[in-house]
Structure formats: C-alpha cells, structure tokens
Amino acid sequence: MANLDKLLAQALKLAEQAGVEVEEEVKSNKQLEREYAKKKEQDSRALDGILLSQHHVHAMMVRVCSWCGAKFQTNFCYQAVCSEECRVAEFMDHFKVDPRKLTLPQSFWEYEPVIIVEPKVLAGLYR
Image (cartoon, rainbow, N blue to C red):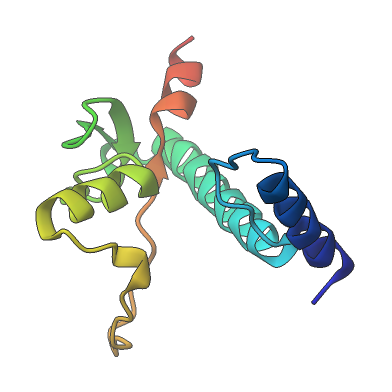
C-alpha cells in the first residue's frame, strides 16, 4: 500500500472516531490516476472529433442526451448519451445493476472508440 493510501486510511479512521461522516468515496492514488488518464483520453478524442468536423462536416452530429437532455456532439449515430455518467445512470435505472461491476467478454471485433464532445465542451465552443 502506498504512503498516500495509508494516510487516507488513517484519515478515514480519525474521521470515523470524531463522528465525521465522509460522504464521498475516498479514492486511492492509482484510482485517481486511472480516472485522470481516462478523462484525458476522452477529451483528446473530443478534440480530434472537433478537428475532424472541420474537414468532414458530415462526420460529426449534434445529439440530445436521452438521459439528461443536454446537447452533445458525436460521430456515431447510435450514441444516445452525452457522457459516461449518463451512460451509467441510464443503465442502472433500466437494469438495476451497476455496469462498472460487470465483466464483459472480450470482443473479437475491432472498432474505433466513439467520439463524444461532452455538453460543457460543446457549450464552450458555441460561446
């Protein structure tokens, strides 16, 4: 266990002893690094999509999220939600299961990741 993880565990223990309720999940350094890398990759793909749309206007389209109703941009006509958060929320509402806890079989089909320009980024572009 890394030093930061030990310190976080100690802080949680102290908070519990003091009667302080910690509402958010305390994440390990590795968890935070993975989330940061994933977000960075999503943002990079969004930027690629924006740049691609300048050359192939038909490749990107503005859609309305089926979960939160926000406008977003994508290159995939079947993309119905604007973000990972909305995808998880919609899945949990529909199936009553957290999709992040499922292990999916490895696909033998190769595919490109769907480009999603999230609502906040799209709104910034319009401004």
